[in-house]
Image 1 (cartoon, protein in one colour):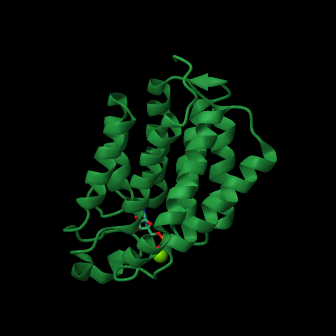
Image 2: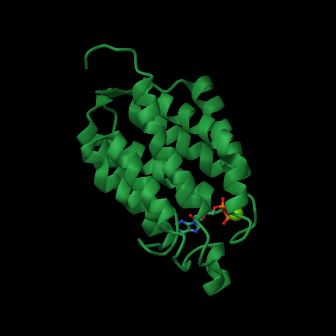
Length: 205
Ligand code: ADP
Ligand code: MG
């Protein structure tokens, strides 16, 4: 079962991973964006870590709702409200359970991804974070490792696509040939699930 501590570890592992990758994410956002994706997410997830320490929410849902709300209020770029909505809506879907199993989490994450598609209007193939998140959710029932591989593959598959949403879409055909920064950071978010899981004290669950 996945408890509040697991979700806290997921967020801190994401913060650490985004921090390490910030320069790469910003470099990806420079040919097809405005070179701020790494700094946007670094600021956002650092604030999430602080908020979680300060408020110490006690349920999985409350951890993700707080994380989402914090991203929305600290990240100025498009990715803040989008990632914020992803986590907030996933958290809301988890309700007030003390712990959830993987299947329930997968279902909740799907609700969150659907909310991102509704908010941003992007569909798979539009060269956005959705191209990593949808395959990840589809693979999640096969475990965190499968979800990670699917997200990484989805992110890499954005390279030949022409952007149809977000800043990169202003470039038209010139957006082709570059990996999408948001899909790349989404793969980090999904990979962090496995790190949060590995860090779990062995308890035979
Ligand atoms: P901004 O584009 O405002 O500078 P960021 O650079 O932080 O924001 O984030 C850019 C990323 O956000 C893109 O690489 C893309 O993955 C994602 N994105 C942008 N617009 C949308 C959208 N409408 N739907 C889904 N994802 C989007
Ligand atoms: Mg940007």
